[in-house]
Amino acid sequence: MTPWLEADAARALSLLALSAEVSPSARAGVLERAFEIAENTGAGWSSPSALVAVAEAAEGERRIRVARFALAAARRSDEGDAVWGLVAAAGLLPEEEAHEVAAEAIARAGGAPPALVPGPRVSEASAVALERASRSLPAPQRIRVLARLLSALPAEARVRAVQEIERRWAPWCFETREEAEAVTPYLSEPLLERALEEVPVWPVHALGARLVSVGREDEARALVLRWAGSSAGYRADALLRLGEALPPGRRPVEEVRALFKELAPEERCHRVKEHPSASVALLGDEAALRIAEGCVEPSGSYARTGALARLAGALPESMRAEAARRAVLAFEAGGHDADALGDLCGAAPWISPADAARLLSASLLDASGTPSLAGVFQGWASVAQLAGLFRRAGGEETVLAAAEEVALAGGWLHRVG
Image 1 (cartoon, rainbow, N blue to C red):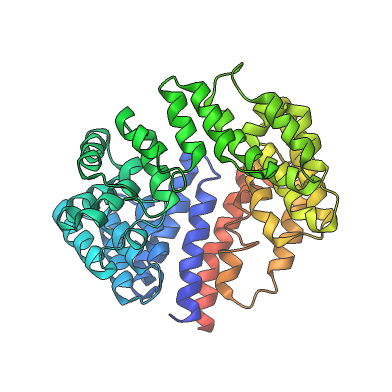
Image 2: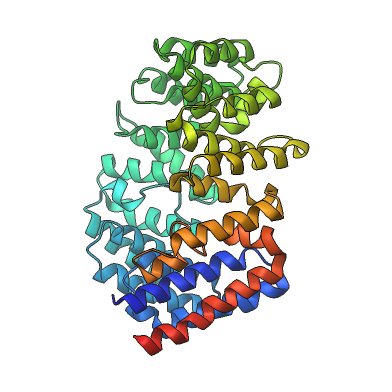
């Protein structure tokens, strides 16, 4: 793909991001710009994921048309996401065509479950097509594909899939913790007992949550403490995960607080960053905020910024702006750590307009040196990543002005290209 087509794909994605920051009445106009770019140049894009994103935002015949561009791009691609591109495109096509494309994806992946469903991002329609097309797979592959699809399947199809998993169950049938964790919320009590015999594969926090859901809270707590090993950090992590599943008054508050005292400041901060809601619930509002700020080593700026930014969405509303303010200060004190920018942008709804404008200016200036035209529109410190900050800095008017500039950039790109 030429740099100009790559930039077109990135422009369309940035317009999708900006459209999420405006009112419904203004959103249609921003989306229309993205659709026009995809329809005019999408046939030449090399990225199936970019085309899938545009197709998912479209409707009717336009959705199918752009989805077929995505399908063609996935067929041309020899990159690692090509199979995922086929699966994602299948969910955007008419039913019979979707089944054929899902079967094509299975053949291309050799039936390998991780290639077919690499994560939780599969749509319901893709899951339905892939469930149907995978029925002829050998039992060991079929059961693993079903495990990865469970959360995306509609309710009735999920019940049937769980029943099939129960029929085909064999010891150690799931090869990854991700597959075991995906199945755990749906385990019947007989299968739960079997899973408890395979704890080295089955994640203890997920089994603990399932035990809680069937009223076996004491067993859940004992399971986590028994298998969490000697590491205070691992035990704290497992108990934080379990604590979210327990009702107030039954949470392992004292155990978690005692374990946090054993951790170094940077590790405490990391645990809060990974589990902001659980940290607030088990450690308390002020304590979670204090721990997030307690990582003062130079190498801790990333963790500190990320923890504070994520806490902004987990704390009571009255504390969110203060957490966001501290996250901005940590980000600036740490030299604008690129790895922390994503978390900081996630806190945009609680960042003050003045801070948002300052971050926007600094980040766009940093991004201006990118060697890629596409990088200005999509990626780190791009228009897409900073969309929420545009909104906070100047409201909807600023977002629409940015969208206009992104759209107008196409004329310049194609004149010089």
